[in-house]
Length: 172
Ligand SMILES: [Zn+2]
Image: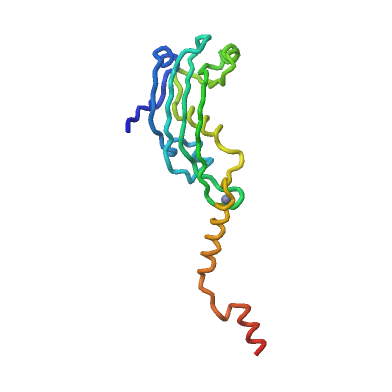
C-alpha cells in the first residue's frame, strides 16, 4: 500500500501546486488520540487535496477513516467506535483568521512555516468522536455483561464457603 503522508507540509506551497496525498497513519502516532482512547490499536486512512480558496487562501479537503477503542459508558466494556471524517479547512496564520472567516469555511490556524500532519488529523478525529461512547446495540452490552458473569461462575466455590450448604446443614 502506498504511503506518502508527509510529516509536515507548507500549506501555501501545497495549495499553489494543487498537491494531493493519501496514506495510513497509526493511532500510536497521534498522542492526543491515545490519551483519550488508550486501547486504540489501528490505523487511519487519510486523504487530502489542496487548492486555493476563492479569496486565495490555502485550503484542504480531505477524509479520515478508521476506528478507535473507548470504554462503553453503559457497560464499561471496550467498544470500537468507527471514525469517518470529511473536512474542508482554510489554513491560515492567526493574523489572517478574521479575513479568512469571510469564506464561511472552517479554519485551521497554524504558526510557523508548516503544519504538522498529525496535529491536523488529531483535531479532525477528536471532532468526530462521540460525546458519550457506548455500544450502539444494547445486545452488545449484554454480551459483555454475560461474559463477565460467565467468568465469575467459573471461580471454583468451596462447598464449606457456600451459604446454601450451611443452610442445608442447619436443616439436618
Ligand atoms: Zn456497552
